[in-house]
Length: 83
Length: 320
Image (cartoon, rainbow over all chains, first blue to last red; front, side, top):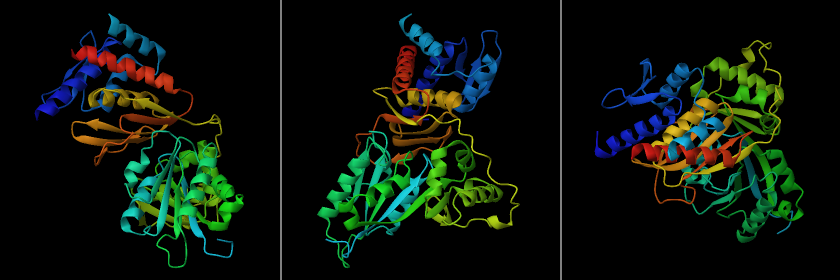
């Protein structure tokens, strides 16, 4: 994995983490090269190979989809920026 | 030039959002079949993306920022007047034809009518055929849900069923039955990535398996929303778009845009939530770069932009 790919992967983990944190979920790398581990505060987790799977896993854990157009989601994301 | 003299032969290439019009056109441009044609690409959004795919040939003209069947109609008529005035036609002319690739929101019949009703234009241009492309993957669903898609099919002289390799032949046959019920006289072809492909024999199917009755709950107008990506990274864009498509893919009929990724300049496309493999585009950078165009109902540019901006700020903060 070249430096650009590493940087890109870290940025993706960071962006995904910022989005899911608003719903109390955590994200870390599932392994060195690819994939995500989505977990709840209670320790329940699912591994996802890609972003599509990651959103599916988050939906199962939360009981609803993370919706970027939901005004409450946008408000929580904005609040996280100023906190 | 008068009505008895040679006229440009005009083909209207239509079809719903994401049907495969640009892919089909690009193949025919590259194969040389359209070497005697001027091509007009119409895009409803003001940030034109499709022409980046069609290439930079000097015979390609872009009409962006309005659908040529309605709000962009006068602009189309003006462009066709200019083109026919600038380009002399005779039996030995290099240019004999004009092809208009409509936006996915256009009713081709309105374009045909607009040209026919313009005395100046109809003296130098003859609309010879309306070719409409329909996507084999989403076709039946579209014909059920979208009155515009049914109008597009009904006015076609030629129907091209695209992406036939992506579904089973019985699904293509079912779509062919539905097409026949809307337009029994149009000639029909299959296509895969623009290349002509065989169609299954639809006549052998049970006639009870006709298309589902129309569901015209989708009566609201379709809009093109443009989201500026600013200096957000590829990673932020990919995460936001994937979330949007996961949550709202059924409502977003078409997404397309040119973004800059670490691997280069990429064309991103999705149809009804299904993301197509990104396509590497050549440089140079175009005015449409960094803009995502989303087609759908019930939202607004402001809402999408607010969501993306908030997301990008949160991601930036998390990464520092």
